[in-house]
Image (cartoon, rainbow, N blue to C red; front, side, top):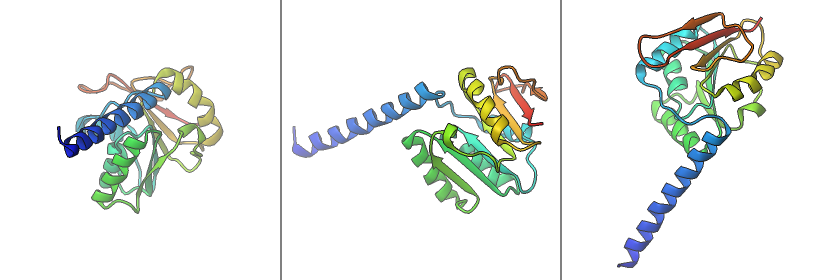
Length: 180
């Protein structure tokens, strides 16, 4: 076996191991990455009732498709994705750069529990019930009145949604909450 074949094989295996480690890390801490279809993204953004000048946060933003789509479709002030996985952070950052949306769309490599959400008008999340329950206090403390929370599939425990949307395809339920 040639030297270069060994080097390339080791690099390839290293990339695979790093990807798996980041994927497992994000799955253990919040939820696995489940990419949303274009139809799902459309349903999510419609459910969020996005208005001109809104600031949108996507908690656990994965590859950034929701924040990028929001910036392309709506006259928002900014969209911020919070992602704990360096792998998905990098993918998001590159997609934002390639889309030319760097002035309106940002992605932060961070734990969303440690990010201040006080300037949000819309918060989007697709997280397990355990995470949603933990976020409930954070939402009450940081979000201003009339901020819309869009939770995909899983409701916020002990909260009454303002509306539940059950699209014909894609997600089973989209729960809409508004901070009082």
